Image 1 (cartoon, rainbow, N blue to C red):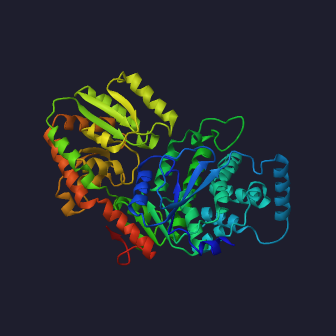
Image 2: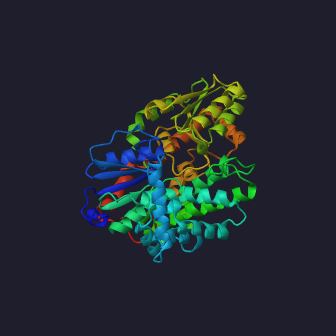
Image 3: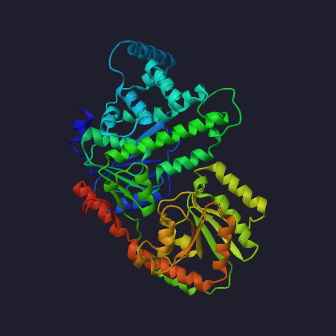
Length: 527
């Protein structure tokens, strides 16, 4: 039975297509997926998870609920040789070269790779059909003459100033995951729902194209922006010398590094446009997110804004206790809550707390998983030790939400990029003021979106990115003014209760799953 024939007989209502999140990695998106699955128990889900490398993550961090009928694990890389036997690999390569030496139609997938990087618009229906053809084997991609010719053409057009050896390896690194993923048959489902663009979003678009089933795309954070931030900070894309063995991760000269960054950025933008082109509805969490999607090529008429939500009632008693402790004379307890990874900029949080400690009594807590980027965690621990703040700034690991918000007076987020942080909604529902950088939906979550929302007053303080002194000043201001903390906490609680209810959010997704289209009138809309 062909994939299309199989998918014509769905065994699940929804196939969630995820990348690097649920059920293996904790975080805001994973928590949202877990809540979605439990909020819609009558909907049958199959989860397709795209991971980085086979064997890199084995332990599930979430228990799959009964309405998840299957879990499909896919990987962008495989540490094993392909094929495993070296002689077999050489035979496959010779066979690929012989096939490419014959006259005939070039690979449609290779043609799609060329168009993705060299032509506008990127991601149209014909291109998706070419990707969906799946007519390119891994051996042919790695060793075929036409692949080499394509790399020469694209390198000459996009990165003529770059070292060809570096460009060769990077081209393979960015496209091999697609070749591998395109070979995966689509899990049979009535609807495909991708939670990001990137490799998972492109795969979901191809699956939707192959099966004729609708695709819903939800972006919590804008994938292209987050990858661009990582590219700017990546050591392996900075100039400064040549390694003895040239590969995708080796250091290179400045001209090559710049060309590679541009090519990677264009690659991720092209993948996003594939998902935008195929999706019947494109959801973001805020006006800022929607504007970025449209700027990256999403058709405005397909875009919708659906804020995340929490259950305000579950935090009501906690909010009352927080009001009672507002006049306490003990040190202010501030907390960062989230993954300890570079994009969250914990370094700025630590430096801000160090500056604030010179003016007020303070207890700072870093709460969240410590195993995703051990090197960055070590860097943050060293910074705390170097500043001599080991007693005042503590790493507490992951904790249940209720215990988190009982133990802090102010939530502080210093992220370089966010969508609509769930921890801000949880803190708001608990009556805890928030200090957050001006990224994603953070400003509208603290200050309001419309006139009625803004009339509630600010639920916290917005700061610039990578500004420790500004964040420290906000901490000091709230430490010295407990009544301001109470007013902001109350405004946040009322804002969440009015505009960020979990039941409203998931009801709209349930309607899409049953109808195959976003509920409401045609065109862009805000929830």
